[in-house]
Amino acid sequence: MGSLTGKVAVVTGGGSGIGLSTARRLAAAGVSVAVVDLDGESAERAASALGGLALQADVGRSDEWPGIVDAVTGRFGGVDLAHLNAGVTTGETDITAVTDEIYRRATGVNVDGVFFGVRTLVPAMEARGGGSIVATASLAGLIGFSPDPIYCLTKHAVVGLVRSLEPQLAAKGITVNAVCPSIVDTPLIADMREVLEASGFPLIDVESVSEAVVDLLSGEGNGQAMVIQAGREAIPFRFARPPGPRAGGTVGQMPPKEFAAHDQV
Image 1: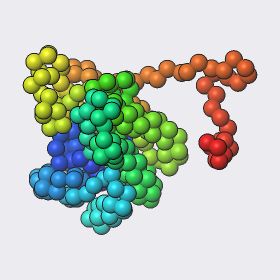
Image 2 (image 1 turned 45 degrees about the vertical axis):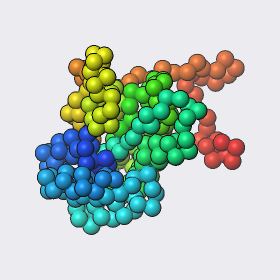
Image 3 (image 1 turned 60 degrees about the vertical axis):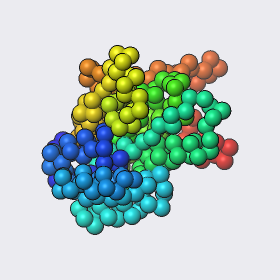
Image 4 (image 1 turned 30 degrees about the vertical axis):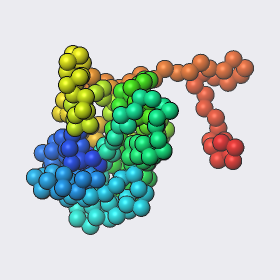
């Protein structure tokens, strides 16, 4: 995509942490930024400092997304870029103690917020001739993460969605990628920061993540899950192929397209 100057971006969870860092970096690159956050005051502070648009919204609700896109289009004329970043942890290790409320909140923000965002943003980007989407997943979307199994579940879902969407969105001129950082020093880990620091666990600064996000938004990479570890440059995760069939077929062969429409899928 090259230069971002003059583009329009939507950043969810943009009032703090990774989202705020991304919003600042985009604004510095000449992008008009809409900061979306459940915390309206945080969104307003961030947008005001950047000369952008503040939107208070629950991104896990499908009925709020049309209003987000309409507001951004009304203010800036369209949408070219999106960082779907809003996310929560559950703080619950014991699967038997995960209530319906805890589960729905995590899947609502972490999964629905990405799906509903992509579904609403794609037509708007296609109308502009293309665009770029980056979702915040996690290293927990690539490995097992026993301290928070439900968070891990949601981030695997984000990675799977991004990888699956790549072919169809490429046909529309839209790239879609995910960033998969290890533990980042954000307000999300406030309760555990001292424990992590005392253990010597290396926390990632938000600037390292937002740098990778903006590189993806301005680049040509597609369908990637970028691993971000402390002290290392972001690198695309190399997914191994599953074993191929022994009874006919070829390694990596996918079902025919007609199968996807079958009512038993």
